[in-house]
Image (cartoon, rainbow, N blue to C red):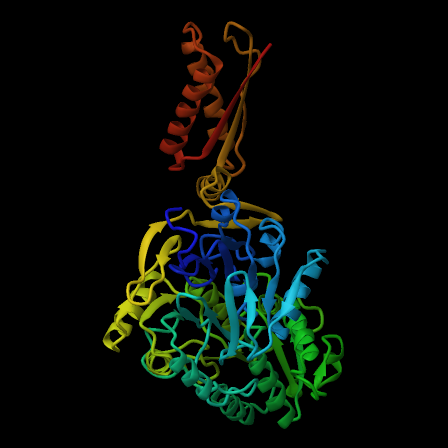
Length: 548
C-alpha cells in the first residue's frame, strides 16, 4: 500500500463494476471501516443457488483489522456475505439500525453463530468508530430503514448514500428529511459516494403508493380464481400493500418461501406489518375459496428452488396453479436473470394463466434514483466530488458524465480495487489493491480464479474422462485399459475404440524410456484429440498408470 497512515482513502471491493456484492472500505489515520458486505446471486453461467462474494484477501493478507462494519440496509447485496466472512475478518463490531440487525441475527442463527457483536445506530446520533465520526440518515428505498452514512473526519466530510430513491409517499417509513439535507449542505459534504443502479432512467422511479393504487385496479377486475404475486421478500412496503389491498377485497394472503417468512418475523419485531388478520398458512388455504386467495411468494428472478418455481412444477402439496389464475411479477428483472425469468413465464403460460409485469402495468417501482432524482440530490448535498458506485461500468460511466453535466466539479470513475485518495478538490485514484470474487459452493468458498472452479466449468460444458492403465515395468498391459466417461458419451462403441487406441499407442511407446508422468501426458493428448475428432468435445482428462 502506497498511501500513508494519515491519508483518507476510499477503496471499493465490490459493487463497482457489477450489480450487487456491495463492499466499500474507508481508511484514515490507521483506522479502517467497511460499509456493507453483500452478495451477488449466480447468473446464467452458474447454478442459481451459488452466491458470489467480495474477495477480502486484501484485508487478511495485510493484517487489517476493521474498527467496524456499517450496514446501510438489509438487502442481500448489502448484508448477504456477512455470515460467511464474519469470522475470517476477525472480531469487530457491526453497526446498523434495528430492522437490519433483526434480519442479520436470523441469518447468523441459521448458521449456528450466536456470538456476534451488533450495536444499534440511532438517527441524529453521532457515533465514533475508530478515527471516523459516523451518523446515519434515513432515505427512502424498497426496504425499511435504508440509510445514508455521513462520515466526518478532520480532513473532510463524506456522504455515502447507500441505496435510495426519492419517494414522497413511501408508505413504510418517512419521506426524506430535506431540512436535514440542507443542514448537511451548509456544513459541507466534500465527497458523495452514490448509487448508480438506475442512472439510465430519465424520470423519477415512482412511489410505492403508485403500486398500491395499481394493485387496487387489478384486484377490482379479478373476480374469479386466485391471484399469485411474486416480489422481493425484503420489500416490506410491497408486502404491506398486498396485505392491505387484499383485505379491502376480502381476500386472504398466503406467504410462500422461507425468506418471506423470515422477513415477516423481522418486520413484526420492528412494528411493521402489524394489525393484519388476513394471513393464513399453506395448510389452511385449502378451506378458502380460490376466488378469495392471494399467494405471495418468492421466485421473481426465476430461481429454480424458489416458491414460484415449485408451484409451477407442482411441488407444493397444498396449493396448485389452475387455468385463469393471475400471476403478477411485482419486481424488476435483475440483469443476468432475464433468461431464467423468461423460461419461468413460459412454464406459467403453459398452465394457461394470465401474467402481469412492470412492462405492462405499474405493479413495481424501482428503489433506485433516476437522473432527475440524482440531480435533486446533488442540489441538496452540493458535493465537490462524485464517486459513482453500485453498478456495472456502463452505469458508473453514465453517472460520472451526468454529474459533470450537472456542474459537479470532480468525478472519480472507479472499479473494484481502486484506491482513491480523498481530498477537497483533488480526489484521485493513486493505486490499485487486490480485489476479486469468491464463490460459495456447498458450504465452502473458492476464489473464482481457483482451478477447482475452472475444472467445474470444463466438466459442465465438455465432460470428463478417466483412464486407468495397469501394466508391468516394461509397459506391457496386464489387462485392457479402464475407461470411465459418463459425462462424455453413452456410446459403448466409442469407449471400445478408445480402449483399442490406448492399447496400440502404449505398445508403440513401450520401447521409449518415458517416465510415467510423460507417458500419462502423451496418452492424455491422444485421448483428448480422439474425443475431439469423434464427437467434438475436449473433456477434462485424467490418466492413471499403475505398475505391477
